[in-house]
Amino acid sequence: MDLTRASAVASRLLVLPECGSTNAELRGRAADAVDWPHLSVLLTDTQTSGRGRLDRTWTTPAGAALAVSVLLRDLPVDVDLWGWIPLAAGVAMTDAVTAQLPGHEVGLKWPNDVLVDGRKICGILAEVTGGAIVVGTGVNTAMTADQLPVPTATSFAALGVEAGVDRLLADYLTGLAAGVGALARHADAAASGLHDAATSRCLTLGQDVDVSLPDGSVLTGRAVRLASDGRLVVDDGRAEHAVASGDVVHVRPA
Image (cartoon, rainbow, N blue to C red):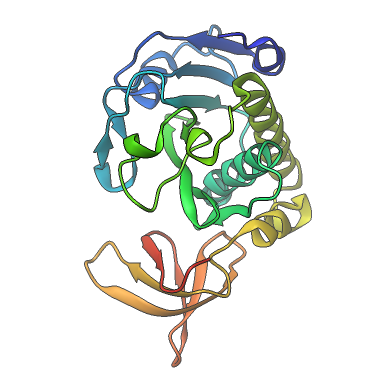
């Protein structure tokens, strides 16, 4: 694939014809800081053992989706701000997808999915490795409607659009680098503009939601805002709860 634009943004870009998990592959290479600097990228369009949140696994037909992992080393000194990294990636990918799908509603479902017209087109998984973070994204590009794994998923192809992969990747990397860079410089999500950017793109806010929490319980209420650390604040009618992680279901469509 021609990735001229993306190669100009990434500090290093490696395309694999096939890969089990791009995140795992990049984590294995991340110890070499000289050859794999900040904003190094590893990608494939044939990922055979992808992994998402809660250790979910998935596979996609060869050539049907783009799996991209980005190595981030220039991070905020305050590790409490690292929780904003998946949201920075979500903002960047939301904007990259929006640029190619005019006329569609594109937004971020907290904390790590990009939706088009209420259906998932991209998932994001950030993992800490040493003093760095690997951010993995899986974007449904050429997946046909019949190949979509669930009714709540979509793809560029299912929407009748041929994804411009080079432009999509270059736009995403540019936005991600800018968001993470601003967060590191300002050491504050509000001052960096990331809090406002994530809030304006977050389709979860204002929704009635069910949040499946790590302890097995379910929090039901209205998603009202993003906290200063990126947590989702849910009002259950009695009190507000700041959720750091969990599976979110929009009770009514976004």
